[in-house]
Image (tube, rainbow, N blue to C red):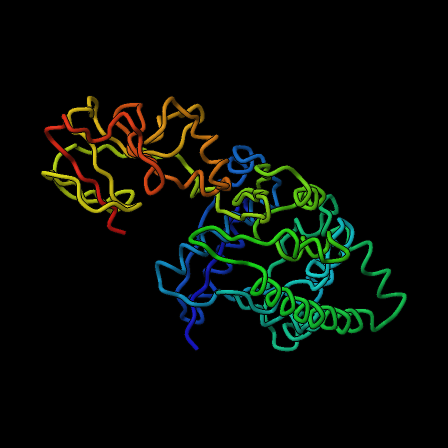
Length: 393
């Protein structure tokens, strides 16, 4: 099997860090393998990003690994995590508070990453190296007990192994049992999502009544929505009984309470946009496809067709989203009406409101596209030039 070697020099231990890089470079030369070495300004990175040293180093190396893999079309990154690392991770997660997934330790395989040494203990690996006269270098920072992982490694785990000589093996058996249970739960939740989640474009809607039928409610809400970045589970549960229109946000999604549904939507898809266009014959392609043409008379009527008096369009045309405070003069009615009141009468949820497009002349609404025209721009017997707008998708 062909492979290359990647080494990170975080430049945290002066000469020792450089000696580690020299050691790996020499090894690659001896076994005739390509090597990549990256020097990081780790201290500057953690100061700028306000993260811990260990988290900052992890972010730096995995970002670089990803860049290397893409540039060299490498499918798999192999790391040297071993069984003791798994136990340490388990205890760290347990001490911080975690769920079933956090107790399953480090996975042997994830997308693009393989950890083949997880089945071996640190002692077994050292014994193999000694038996085969393999040399290695120790990272001296691993001996410093100021880090939580090192405290667990040198102060907690030795005591646990004293309690039972087979503690590491027993832990691995327990971890596998938890992993299998987590797999069963994941399959069950996947079936729940398949039955409950209704996809409509970039929005997922979930029946509130269906969710309220689950007992206990909080773990179900956690299982269904934690992949979308939500963490405040009391807020998520309380959303079910909140007023329509209330929303909560994660770093990537928002969850909105409707009358009968929760609406799940990526944050990036809800930004307000405005598109300018000319009141001349032609095709509009963004944000929707629409044909503009001059006609001699009014023909067929439908929700996708609008006829206007061209002379009433005194300002540049644009297509935009709803803005708070918008009003219009509904076709066939006297007086103006707030668009928010129109939306309420139409029983539109927040997502539908935000996705609604408006054809405007300057600030004036000409058409709530596909729903209602504005009476100020209607064709009258005195109209000389008629524009026809046809939504073609």
